[in-house]
Length: 151
Length: 144
Image 1 (cartoon, rainbow over the protein chains, first blue to last red):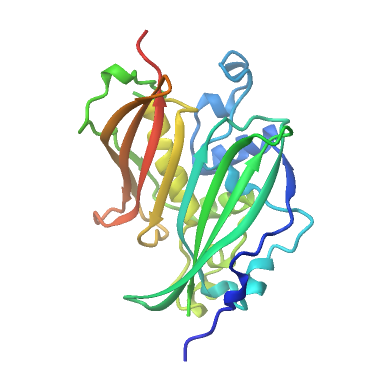
Image 2 (image 1 turned 30 degrees about the horizontal axis):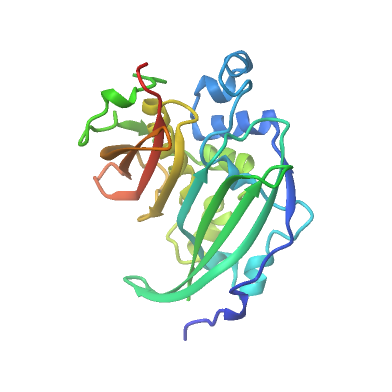
């Protein structure tokens, strides 16, 4: 018997949260991927670049989370266990590079939920979008995250 | 070719990215990625948990493979060139897998004085199975 997901989550907006990009986190992230690009890792290269500092790799914003919130909030809203969750799709749109010391505001919203049956059985797809803005409310980047739940 | 910065004029539709080979994937890399990304889902760390979840064992974070694909793109186009990158995680990456990232130029365009190149990108395992598929748009500088 497939599990049921709570569809009422569609349209839900999570409380906006601030993140301040840390130099060491950029480097830790790049090294964890094994991407040793000097524009991420070397302060002198960054300082001499068009951005005036090191920049974050394209997928770095996935590290942004609300430190005050419960990391399991979405799963609890959906009524599913973490062992049923897979990452289906991910998209980043980058309007400006993320640099150390900058503080951004993240706003995440659940925009869609649909079900499909794949070769491994019935699945639900939860689509979340996050807008990342700077102190002047200008858009810096967006993320689109599709979570797959094995029903 | 590493950390190259290709000029817009030097790109032709159909050009291929230099392949980037990553791995073999080791558990320690998944643990490092968990710490760096903040994704501590035990399905990427704990063999017993992953088996009990019906996944047949530990597998890599999709975002790690997306990071590999992003690296293949920026090694060619330059850091800070990615405007849009979207992928689908098509198959699981397992411990000991070798992941090869590839791409091919689909189109070139210029809009508001920005020169854009769109590529299809993908990553495949050592059996040639696609584990990530997607598209990227990069903004390239002119040779000047």
